[in-house]
Amino acid sequence: MKNEIYEIEDDAVGIVFPVFFATSPKTIREYLEKVNIETDYLFLITSYGSDGDQNALKIMKQTLNAKGIHVNYTNSVLMIDNFLPVFDMAHEK
Picture (cartoon, rainbow, N blue to C red):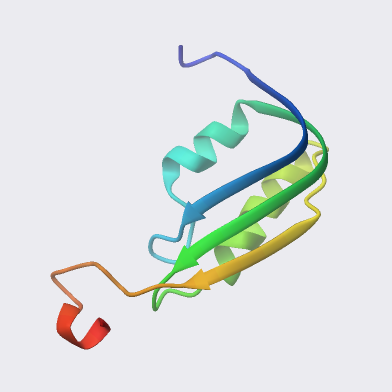
């Protein structure tokens, strides 16, 4: 299934993903290379910790725009950092 193309068609489509090390997960980026999206309204939402979100949103938007897919809205949600070897969960709460 590695070469399969995915087709999505709907009035509104959203892609919600976490930010890992200031970018989107590799699996999300690979998926976007294989998807065609037909929609009137496309939005991207990220969740992030200390890494920030702007780079991830920028890369995702550029990837989709390069395929001729327009992104209408982007936003992000600040969450706790959860990489246990680095962050103290008691402090993150």
